[in-house]
Amino acid sequence: MVKIPKEQNRYCPHCDTHTEQTVKEVTNVSASPMSKKHRKRQRKIDHGYGSFPYENPAIRSRGRKNPTSEKKDLRYTCKECGKGHMPKNPIRTSKLEIER
Ligand SMILES: [Zn+2]
Image (tube, rainbow, N blue to C red; front, side, top):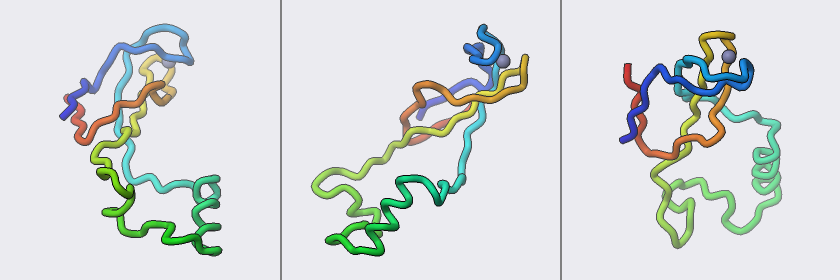
């Protein structure tokens, strides 16, 4: 469990200084259907290649443990300019809590 404060003093790339920023976790955003990753997957589904793609997530990584953690999609919104940006190094954790 990783707890992060809702309001942080961070660097804003738009203002080029440290400003007060609010954090928001982005969830349930579907991937773009035109992305390279998606087209590659669709090509493999159409052509067929071995047992790819693994529809069952339990056998996603063969011979290894399935990952339980993921990189969280966080958006920081600057209070000075009102613009949002993503962190350079996103936090990798299974559980994330944004404190009030
Ligand atoms: Zn700013």
